[in-house]
Image (cartoon, rainbow, N blue to C red; front, side, top):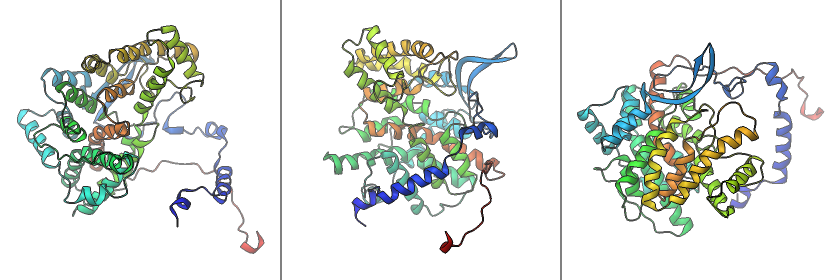
Length: 454
């Protein structure tokens, strides 16, 4: 089979695709008739209760006079407010990824000795099997780093003598190894693709076992391995803010679903990666950066609020950027008044903008943050509040850190693997049945007709 034929949609495929579309389309009114919770949500967008978790909580409403009303968003890890956690390690001039990962996995904040031992354990696991980079990552490099990451994770199964053992100690060992290896798998995959397809120098830095996770990411990514303390601290903050967001997000729910089948850790994590890759889940910060690049190219004056307003209205009216009618980074399925992750990130972005001499870009983002919710509320006649989400500023941060666009979603995965690990172990520890939701069939009985009579 030629490579061209392999990737070509032939007329026969087009014909069969039309047949498939015809026989898989369901009348939208039937979803209402049978009270189907599409996307596992009710008509008000509230998630259907599908499980219990003790790992994190996302709150965006409060009860007033017996009515549920929007409130400022709150995110907690194991009961600890995310703002308190971030203030704790930021004020202490230490990195928070390792401490927060310990909290999610074991349900308690580590003391100094426990944190030191845990950080060393992660560092010890930050080594790939001999020949893995040459034999696996450098073979058939993919243009999509999430696919590269998923392939590498699945291949690690072959290097594990106890790959199918689902006992808690073994799964914990596997999860800790994957948490440590995600940066290497992603960044080595990026450098390999850049070398073979873009003609760039092939750079494979070994991790420095004395560095934190955030520092190692910058160390192995950058040609000269250099970075400032502020850069490492803000990247570390991004990792903490993205590592967990309740059991109901798509990739964490995927983790629960696949784990309930009692399959191996590598298969579970690869499925979660596939979920996060989807543009409705993990790719939003890329869209934010691309939207702002288009905005900057079309604005004659970045400080003219009237001109910015016209552009934002054009976005909503499907007349600008990708013509999808969206202002990316504004709005969230749960938060309406505020996304606490965006609030935390905002406090550090200004400092990084000063260091990078990108104050004008930061001011443009700040202006859009102020104007967009008002414009959306007016244009869409929304009574429910709308706010910026964490993707709004994380894309700007990654841009200021000069991180390649291809790694934006893998950076999300480098963080969220800690949450996936916690959810996998929670499901294993409380697993009773395979997760199997109900689907109502609309098929009618048919009489079989012999082939020669059709």
